[in-house]
Length: 216
Image 1 (tube, one colour):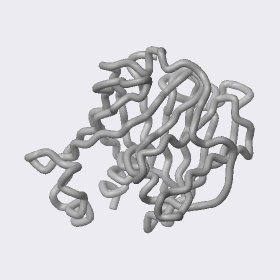
Image 2: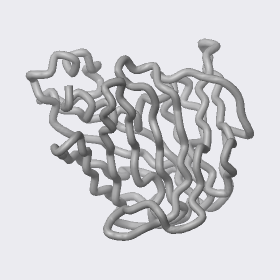
Image 3: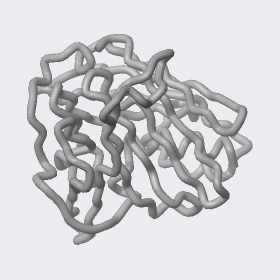
Image 4: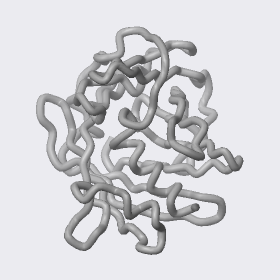
């Protein structure tokens, strides 16, 4: 179950809009600011750690191209053969050896983050750094369902411990339709981008993916 949770976290960055559903919003298809920033640069890599209880795991995340400010991000890691749920991952997300090998598209600016990983490939705000608590970002998909993300917290002091220091974050919650997962939190920072993704499981555990960009 722990290994399965690891891959749920990685896939949140790629397929979240296929998995979640919800309610209502502000302008959700655009963000302000410039994408000509170091974090949104070809060749940038993200050191990443998934922690589940006392265990931790790593994968490879890197920006392979940027077109009109939209970055294509590659995700790679091994898929253990002894976890039956992982055998259901579509072959297009795997390499010839059966390892996870897939991409997602994001636009990162000094004003926020958009993702394009829904079924319609529409821009959908993950965060706007000038947001207020209670702001919502909603995407209506072509199948008639909607996805909602809500800003639930915004730091006024450096109170989130990350990479050996405390930073300010804007925290966004998305409800979950994944069996066993009750909700997902995204932790973001205006300089470092998406710094963590935390799952809240029905069993009370909170596996977390933490990201550290090499360029910012």
